[in-house]
Image (tube, rainbow, N blue to C red):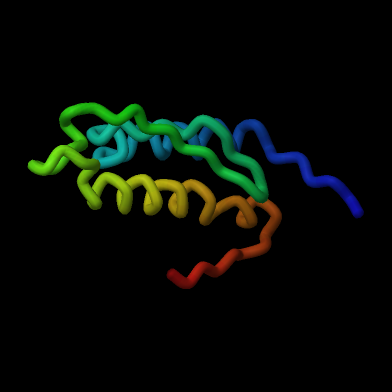
Length: 87
């Protein structure tokens, strides 16, 4: 099996895309790792992420998941292999 190596320029562009996206940036989501088969976004929770009952607002969790899917959605495109995702 041939091991694939991600293009560092593409990874940097994907990281910039997530960092520059208005909503993930507002919430504080940061892309910390991205490869063909994995993605890590981090978020330091604070008071601004809590709902009135003192637990994390569900919208924060959805935004985190959606941002991860956004970052991963193009990983096959640099190989010319489109990926499809059904949620």
